[in-house]
Amino acid sequence: MTRIKHTLVAAAAVLATLVGVPSIANAQMDQNKMDATQMAPMTDGEIRKVDKDAGKVTIKHGAIKNLDMPGMTMIFTAKEKSLLDKVQPGDKVKFAVINDGGKMVVTDIQTVK
Image (cartoon, rainbow, N blue to C red; front, side, top):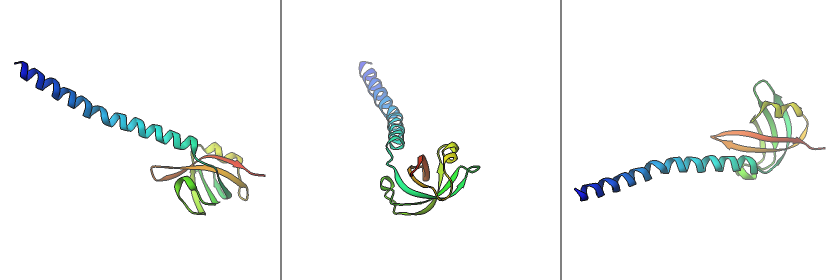
């Protein structure tokens, strides 16, 4: 009987460990995502088009180092539509962008004088 108890306790410990691992991994991924948002470096760009209703902005930009992306012109989604209130086509900007599940998201944008 004691041997069965020990086996059940050991099996329960292994199961608890296996069940707990994904939640720890997910918490770490969420932390990494938050860190990436907070630490994304600013990239130089020029606003080409602003679509406030859709929350999108077209930016001609230099290399985006944190995404290993060369300079080009592309459409980004604004993390918050209010970010687009302060820019218009032709503005020179510095902006931060992250890859959020394959979607390029602008997390900060500032006009440059």
